[in-house]
Image (cartoon, rainbow, N blue to C red; front, side, top):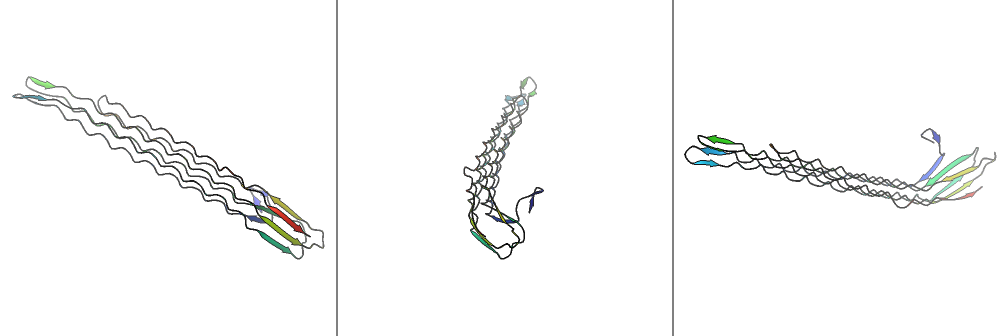
Length: 224
């Protein structure tokens, strides 16, 4: 069999690969701030001042990515070859660990509300107010942990070869899965007008660790 254009083996005894972890869920966006009250003036009674726009809420945090599953141990196998004409290559190992899910993206912060506007009536007037500040972006979720490699197994081979053919055994340690990437931090909410401040972006999540255990190699028992 060819893998990436390279011959690996004729016969494989391999454990199943561990399942990959699912991605974390994104954080919900923050609610926007409310609009400020406009200035309200009356020539007979004076003015009611304007008010500032409300601040946007912070975005929700992304959730952690799921851990990947471990690779499975290869099942023991026995082969009986009555007449081996040429060489045959066997390959046996456990299944590789699955790759972990990335963390969810942080939610965007809510926009700041607009400030109340200025106004006047007759001799009375009042100024407008500032817009609210944008909410902070949510934190990105952490990546999940990669799966461990599965163990090899025992492979027993009986064969007869009148032409001098040989059984060529190969094995390898199953690899660990990759840890999930940390989710991106949410973007800050837009500033309310006028003169509000934009919200800060959320911090990204941490990358998950890779699997910690490689699988053991397989053992062959060959009886010509």
